[in-house]
Amino acid sequence: MKNYVTDTICAISTGGIEAAIALVRLSGPDAISIADKIFQSKQVANLKDAQGYRMYFGRITDQQTEIDEVLASVFFGPKSYTGENIVEISCHGSLFVQQRILELLQANGARIAEPGEFTKRAFLNGKMDLNQAEAVSDLIASDSKASHHLALKQMKDGFSREIKSMRDDLLKLVSLMELELDFSEEDVEFADRTELKALMERISDRISALLSGFRYGNVLKNGMPVVIAGKPNVGKSSLLNALLKEDRAIVSHIPGTTRDSLEDDMVIAGIRFRFIDTAGLRDTKDEIEGEGIRRAYDKIKKAGIVLLMVESHDDISAVMSIISSVRETINESEAQCFLLQNKADIHSAVTLDKQKLEQQIPGISTFVISAKIGSGISELTDAMVNSVQVMKGNADVILSNMRHVEALGNASEALSRANEALQVGVPSDLVSQDLREVLHHLGLITGEISTDEVLGEIFRSFCIGK
Image (cartoon, rainbow, N blue to C red; front, side, top):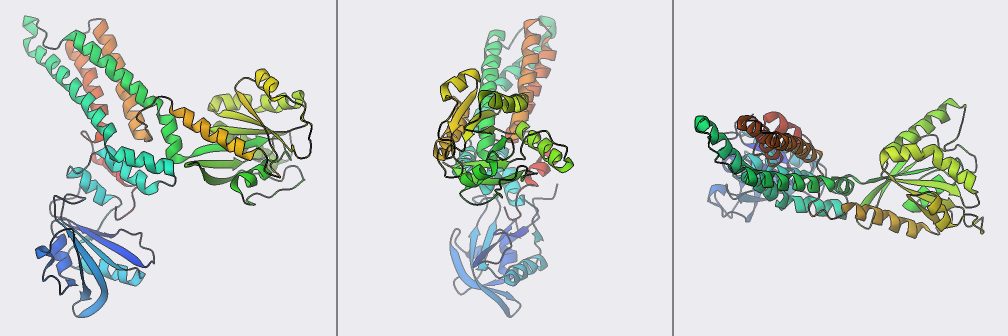
């Protein structure tokens, strides 16, 4: 790990693209003195004498050569984002100007920041815990109302407080249990076993409740994958175009036009859906089409929703045939299946009754639509949004981070081992070993326990300048 006491970092925090305005940021013990070497202002002689959290108009110069007119702000540590002294320079967004300012900062003692290093310093300096730091990355990456709200909620640290509370309560009893080892010959118990069992049960129940919300949180963060499947020429590409409200896929009366999956995203009611148009499902000797069909089944396995299309005039045997071809795959994916009777504009008399069909095929919701003219599409999208919302269930805290899920899962397993050991009268030192493992996994979530390897993996995904 780098020396965070003497190191000063700099970066372009606005992405290094040409724009009207760009922001160059420094953080570290020498941030103010380095910025002073290239910033001149009539409003303040030196930035170290500036008032914090104010902007000062001035110039960036290379010796006597003016580079740009800028605004500079000073944030004195520890009351700053990183907990260190920070200087932010708002300059014009010319790529040349941005790069030149970075070069001057480096020439005067700063170094280019690594991805996520500003937020990493905020974590290391106690400005936020690891869960909140990860939420910063999620907030930057959010592309829908739902993912934005989820990231903001995570940043407010309610989840962190809950994890810390569980860990603190368990730590008190584990410490008392380990204290008993010093008095093993006297056969005394400092840790109330009844209280310990009750606490372990509460923590176990709470972990189960937290894990139950992950599927919903994962959808809010990454989007709901929706696979459009069915036989050739049933209208899958037309449906994709109708959902996206643009001609994204080629529509043809020739069966087998789509030979590979075609994907696009759309936000509906604040939730991002990832629509995937697939090759028509049928027996074929065509090698390329066959590969497309194999890929279609692979997409179905990873789907959250499957839109299984038939034609509105198909009889029950034809419908059951296509359902049987994908049912096993759908069951493996735990996806919700919507049966769409398409081409209602052509076949006005629908031969299959919705209620009877859903009775014959449990777990399937049926819709009569026309992808060509758009009828029934709004009812379908409403049902898709509702299928996401019901996933939340009674969860009050929504997880979206796989690292947190793995840590909670490991904590739950260790807790089960400790509970079983306690039930059969295993010695206290072995029980406390399992409980220490629970504490370890809970501590990984908030960063109370961390390693350079874990931190490196987390912050590597951040953008430079944040």
